[in-house]
Length: 282
Image (cartoon, rainbow, N blue to C red; front, side):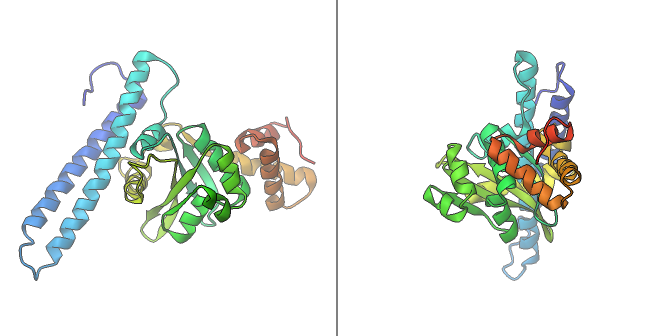
C-alpha cells in the first residue's frame, strides 16, 4: 500500500485502518499456524480449538482489511479524477458480487435505527422494509439465521415488501444477521448477487467483518464515512405529527410511513419536510 501523496483525510484514515487490520490478520494467522503445529496429538483438542479460533479471527480481520483498502483506493482515485465521493458500501457490494447491498442496524425491538446502502435500489429497498414493517432484515434478525428469497417466493413470503422490491427490478434478496455475543444488532442484505459469487458463507464472512471490525471493533469506521442514514429524523417527524393531530406517537409514525409509501419518496425526505414545516399531515 502506498501512503505517499496528498490524500484526503478519509482516504488516509481508510489506509491506516486497513494496515492495522492486515497486521492483526497476519498475527492471528501466525498464532493459528502455531497451534495447528502443536495439535499433532489426536487426544489434544485444546490446540485445535485455539487454532480454529485464531484462524476465524484472522479471516475476519483479512476481510475487513480488504474492504478498507478497496475504499481507500476509490477515495484516492476520486481525489485524482473527481466525480461523486465514493461510498464505503460500494466496496461491500463488490465483495458480495453485486452492486446493491445495505447494512441495517436495529434496536432491542428490532426497529431500524440506521441504514447504509451502496446505491439507490438498495436504499429504496430498505426504505420499503422500514415503511411496510416486513422483509428480510426483520426475519434474519428474528431468526438469527440467513434468509433468502427470489422470484415469486418474494411475494409469497412478504406480501407487501415482495411486490414492491420486484417493482424496483430486484429479483433476489439474501440477508444475514450481524451477530455479536448474545445479541443481533442488524443485518447485511444483498440484492441480486451474481450466481457465480453468491453464497451465504461469503455473505456471513463479510457480515462478521462488518460487525466485529468495521462497526464495533478496533478498526471501526465512524459513520461508515458519512454513508449512514439515521432514522432519528423520522421519529422526530412522528413527534411533530403526534402534536399536530393529538394522537399517539406510534400512530403518527405509521402515518409518516404511509405518506412516504403513497408518495413514492424516501421516508427521510418526507420526515425532513415535516420537521421543517414544509409538509403537514392530516
